[in-house]
Image 1 (cartoon, rainbow, N blue to C red):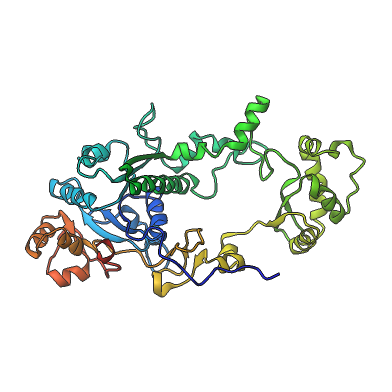
Image 2 (image 1 turned 45 degrees about the vertical axis):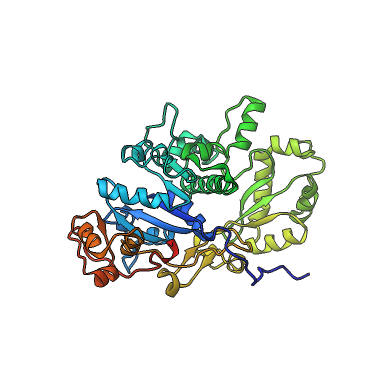
Length: 431
């Protein structure tokens, strides 16, 4: 049987024509709008005249802001001082022409600028407005600072992440940030459906702490059923055994899952005769005695290589897979075929881009590189009706900033921004 492949035929982008104002920084908000961009939306990033703070986080021998480039690909850039009345007025005018606005300032910050949902709603009745914050827009923690690590701790995730001897650990990926970005995108998409059906705009409120706490399905089920506080289990599963990572002869590890239907096959592959041991007679007994069972299985895995065990386990129908490193996944054939990691420096200005994992007709996914500061400023303001003289004055006053390409075109110079580089998409996609 031949494995299916992604069709070369692609329909219109899912979000073609949807205009998004990206008033975000750090990771959760930008990841939300990157998902929308990869689904075909036209995204305009609003950033300070000095540039997004993440641009300053330079990495590697080329001294590029790789975190910024990966989370802001294929967006335009309007550099504007939203704290100034003129800057806030520009953003307000853009909101009237947009379908979605995403922001992730601290709760209440946008309202203090006159750019909150209730401020814009009378002028933008169909606008989908998404606020991303640490703890949401209401509740006793609404004004507390919330970052990824705090959310992992507050949500209970850190209490169940770590080793069986009680050594706690954070998740290896910033799951609070990326997870909240995903929930934000889901909320925006649902609200857009209603808006397009004539139901009006919506306010979408998503929080880092909520996002991670909502993933506690297994742990909540365990606690409600037993009354025992769930503890870290290393790589073991909360409700089944054997179901964890084991160390093989070559030092690599193997993730193994086995319930009733796979149990006999697993024992046959490992040449273990445990049928007469009452501790392992049923799935529930194996779960209760998972620690001694893991010791027995670990002793067998240590006798051969990871590749050997994966081959024989897969042949026997036992679910298994390698524990890969980051370098492994970047060169993995499965991910390569799926287009999850794109290695195209000429197109993206970075050697590797992490794609949005939605493979579907109508999902264009990553298309272009991240913008330079102010790459769309002049074109966007011109679309709003500002003439060249007024744009040059706003640049001189520090209300907006333009990229080098637009400086060359308009003669505008900003004493506050320094040099930018090339323009990427411009504002054509925003029209």
